[in-house]
Image 1 (cartoon, each protein chain N blue to C red):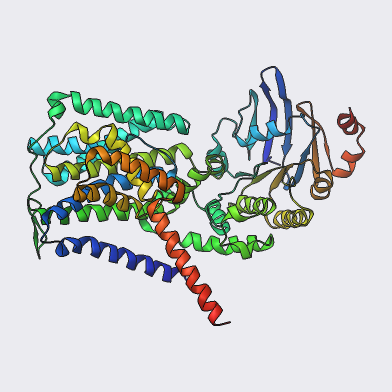
Image 2 (image 1 turned 90 degrees about the vertical axis):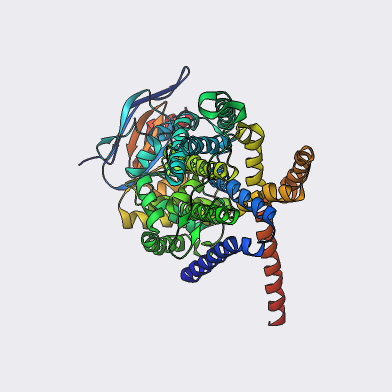
Length: 250
Length: 333
């Protein structure tokens, strides 16, 4: 089965510190995957290497069989990689609906220029139905006309995830989606991610510290330790693994 | 709902165009006011160009009159030496300014915001030095006087003669309105939305698939070209090109026009140009006091109207309307 995401022997050092030290894994089947590990295990660095915020020292990253580790961030996005940010980024001056519609629009310069001259808004109208539906799923529809800057942190996070999904990515990367969210919104997020996964059948990779959240959401867990993938398997097996317990306590 | 908003927008646009064309009819007996208004239109074009960068993309260029100067000198040299008539000459000026914009943009737009601002300042100064010192081409400090005005334009139903003040006003108004439409079309398009995203959060825009550098380069080149068009028109109006028109003070002046008028609004640059070009012309405020007055005005604006005069006007109208609807709601529970 061809892999959606393949990380092959990636290393990344900062000065004398090897943050990622030969990490390898492949995600072939659609699913929700959790990436966990103790602080300093290299999760965030590996995440940044996959998204293009950092470049790997050695090794390579493939998205649907295509090498992406040398590509700039926007090229990766156009190949179907969507991500959210740990600090949560939305366009604060735009309304929620415009945030989602912007994420959905074709951002090739040529097509944007065509759109500017032809004034065609057909695509936007088709997308706005889907945008409204997705906003409804996370209980943000009544805020569709509200600037995103007026939302609470948790609501922004939901908006950010909805925006990432509307572009129909092959791979969705979520960086600590549960951090800073109250339990009610966390439940909304949990159900939304399961619902979207059931609809889209894509690969979702989540870096997360909230164990309860990730263990109940993911079908498969990867554990990083000292820059490598230490263990992978279903949540139940991971929770019993002596190596994982040692890594967290050691 | 969307259609009604479209009709409202279109009718505002048509009203605006009618006002621009009819102003001289009202002011037919005051040639000086007509002169000031024509000059305002000539400055409003580079101001709209800068607004595309400063207001919509979040790029501050402190050398934008330099691009206007390129358009001006190219138009002037072609017209003065009889190489090309008006239309090809000003189009050449526009294109050359755009190309220089590309050449300047490729290295500069990779810089982070404050370094970019400093480099644009340097670019403006370098262009000024070139205008001032390439004597064989630009006439040096003396400039290029005696540039011929465009010949009469036959529209079929009327003949516009730009050699007369009213004729030139109509020509300037037409070019101004065309640039206004271009500004509108760019801003309210997918491209404009990508620019707004870049202004608000470059990292996010990139991760959503926006080619940040490519978009910045495109709008920078377009903006430089439009500034060049304004410069070409201005030099045709004043019939002389002088390096001082594209120097440091003029660059700062243009930034002030955009910020005071209202950066990031469609009408802001025009309002700013009216205030900075027409008002001092008509009130004859002494040059020495101008900067002091504008300094104070800018301080007041920064404190009380961070979105410029246009932004102040819009929020004022909204407040009045909100007040009004609150009253009517109270009356009909």
